[in-house]
Image (cartoon, rainbow, N blue to C red):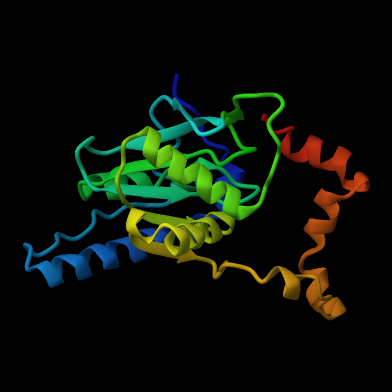
Length: 226
């Protein structure tokens, strides 16, 4: 059966999803202009919330994970790999995927580690949430699906993951769409405190990452598998 969308969660990313679709379309137009390809047709008009579900979720073993992912578009089309952020999920792209599929892209939207139906193959595997580890997951996923390269796009943590993929594996990335300005971080600089007003904007980091926030986090988001 198909997965139903969490409408409140998708509401947080309406603007980001629209930005991603527009950025991807611009990239496609630029590429076609450079290669002398036929003029791109306009994208069909589409209201946010037009789609509420993906086709049945697929699974593939990739690296140390069983990766759950949605797929849309022709199997032989150029690949667009769409990476969600935290604490969101693949449904952030439920309206974007049909737009790209209509342009002939094979759209792959994986649940990142710790999300949805993606789980570790071994209960003894070390749990690591570093974006570089997620980037390695995505390269393993591309290998498992025999995808040589892809346009890699993401927002929030997905954007940072996409940036790392482009930096470390440039030959696997045909293009990059990075939404929300989440670039490769400086860990040393990140240890320095910000002014109180700035720290307040990151309240949820303390809430989700401390013992005090654990019960509330579970009741609000539910426990994550893997």
